[in-house]
Length: 159
Image 1 (cartoon, rainbow, N blue to C red):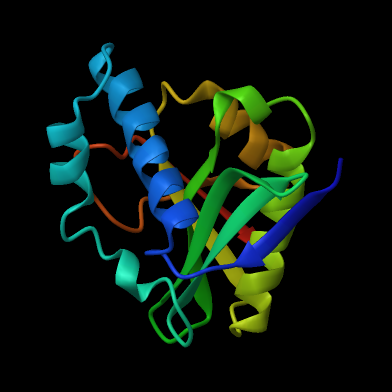
Image 2: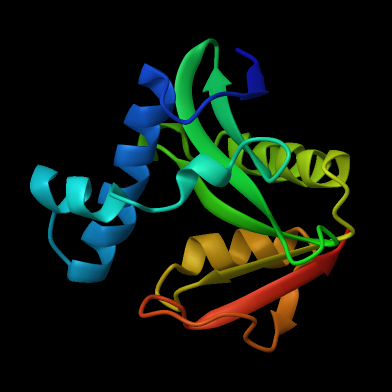
């Protein structure tokens, strides 16, 4: 089976289901219990995802053998020289099959195509697997470029 990584509108059925799965996964791990449907709805309300479309960003859906398996986005910041990596997610059943590395490469390619020369991201310390993925792809710890309740560490990389 082959991985594909394609741009997709955030409101298609597959993209919307993946966004819900992403939020449920990260919120559930933070709360140490499954997120309810109402909590997922609240978390996705007004989350700014509409900016993940050109010219301000891009949203990708990862598929393995045609089945929706994950997603990720890039959002241009400032004057467009920097892009933020966001909503990087693979459904648990698809992890460990090479999709995360392919998704990272595809997202970096999309950021370059949008004109970005540097990628930044923020994450939580408890998301150990995600942090390992970022470091494996050459991201290093940087000073905070934003703040929020679920941000513990910031990474950056020249594209």
